[in-house]
Image (cartoon, rainbow, N blue to C red):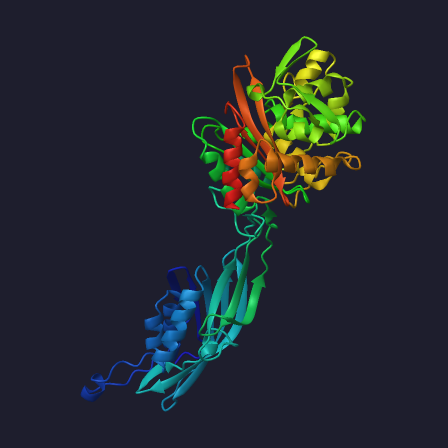
Length: 523
């Protein structure tokens, strides 16, 4: 017999396996004769070892187990590893096999094994293949160490991956669903961009439950941090339901948390469409602007909440004739009463006697002159120019003429009253808003406005909202165009929730008050 050394080289990967025998294989033949010919041919131990590895790496766990001396245990472990390590390829090189003489019942061969993980990462180790003569046939002696030196009975190998996808979550920490707040989430997703990081993986010895016992090699995932959208699911759902009840006209609602400035909801009905007009569409604010006019009167020393003011049904001021709703008249009443009843003649007269810049200066306290850059959305608060003439001031005092505000801006007005200072609006917590908050309301003004806005609900133009708790606010009917049509508004707050509701061409504030009731009732 040729005494040159014998070496087996096995290469396998994917679903195909290639086996190459570099030197001749020693096969012991049982000799000639009738009796001998009835015995199955005894395959050389090196070939059996090669058959084992070829079957393992071609995914044939049953065939591999069949050439071992413990088919049941081997088959179970091999199947678990096959299932638990998808995409992992294999290379094995068998070492020198000694010659096997008659009467020898055991043999051994060394093997250098390399598992190649997805991405080309190698995991290498050396193992010992023991073969035993069982029922006159060579069998690989089963041991879990054939798959890895540290593997024990009942264990297997597994390759797992860890996602590195960041996500957009709402203020409750839950992922934002695809259909959530569509009027703003499209631009938020564009701002967020790709949130995918570098995935992680782990090659490990696992127990029968699949839990890692020993990590052989791993790469930690490097995920992009999730971004938190300040929108509140419950508030958003209530806002959407409120505007959806408005039929035929565009309806919008913006809600803000006064204590933080976090935007809680932005909703528009189908008539308003998906263009986020609630955030930057400018409309005449009507009598909701009386919050600003009252502030201008109080900060300039013209009046306090208790100052008596005339409230006739009609009044000619300069060249403008001003009329109250249905021409109601109250006579002379305290300013807070005129505010609650939304007396146009009272507030136009106050504004007429102010300086051209008094209303813009008062509006600045409420953020209506602020230029906030809120990541994720484009916003505008309003346009409040100086009123250089008496007629312009007469109209401006009741939110008409050149005065314009957005639903977003008027939500900030309500939040300012609740907070005492305009909060900096924010939509994505990890992306701060650019822009400083305006100066806080002067001492006593915020308290007076809160009381006046409370009276609007308890005894004024929004009595329908009294059953929804401590609601404070202001109604608004704003003529536009040729003066024959009007927008309907309600702006206000309850606790730490400030909001504005606008129904474009709604005819009066009543439809906005009704939508507000739906909104607050759902919360």
